[in-house]
Image (cartoon, rainbow, N blue to C red; front, top):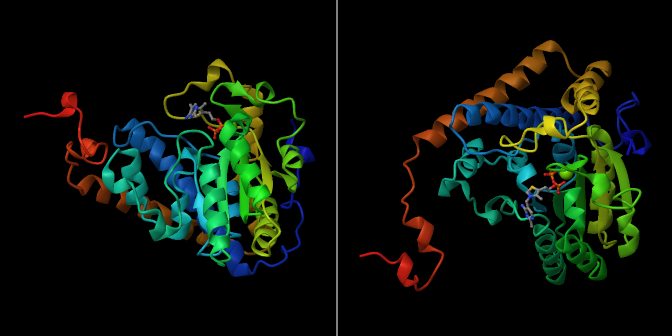
Length: 335
Ligand SMILES: Cc1ncc(C[n+]2csc(CCOP(=O)(O)OP(=O)(O)O)c2C)c(N)n1
Ligand SMILES: [Mg+2]
């Protein structure tokens, strides 16, 4: 499955429609913030400061590009791969770091940010997104929901239920499939006989589009079209953002046992933040000084985030049980 048959945009030097110079730089700032969060998190994990962590290195173009098409009132439904996506809404790094540290302060209130809780059970948040979008529509609000999930998620029943339900109810949902080629060690070829995951949209009667997942402007253009259509009453869209996973599934994974090293090299050579940086320099929007200041700001945010997370008091272990049962069973009661 080659990315070359997917929509690309960064090769074209023309300024993209509908994005101001300020927008283009803001998009860059968000990508760098996500990249910095991810790279620092791998270090924090190795230092024993956060738990097992799902690396999203080279997924920043998908996350920043797609969410940039949303209005502030729109909702984001992340999987574990998009754990830090709240950063684009101004959520403190401390909160997300606490999630990975297993601290209760890491469970934000979704209504504070219009970012749903991180869903680890694969694809289960797709029906949540469909339900929220349908509910908002019934109330006469024009809120759009955007759900992120992987290639493996398209084999789950909840994918079918969520996409079918959204389509039938004409709910304003944008389904963003991050096709990184792998579900841990299972390749996409073992998930489906469909030629592309975007083709699955046909079965639900909705538009499906395939974009290069390392091209932030292509992802954004597809997302903006989908968001506009959803808001105008045109129902859901399935976006397949194609790339090849260039980092381990998570800090507990050793992909050398199964991955194609040559394709990893290829994906790393086309890494998405660098590609966008090159584009911005070419059109005269970015120079060394600005690159440095954006990176320094992101690094400062992460440094402050981990310091604040570590300064919080340890949680009370009783909390583990407090919200699980109204009447705890005898084996969980203690004197
Ligand atoms: C319902 C469910 N089954 C199995 C798992 C174990 N699991 C964790 S990650 C993963 C792979 C998912 O792959 P994909 O949907 O492609 O997302 P990616 O990790 O590549 O972003 C699996 C099977 C799970 N979390 N939830
Ligand atoms: Mg995957």
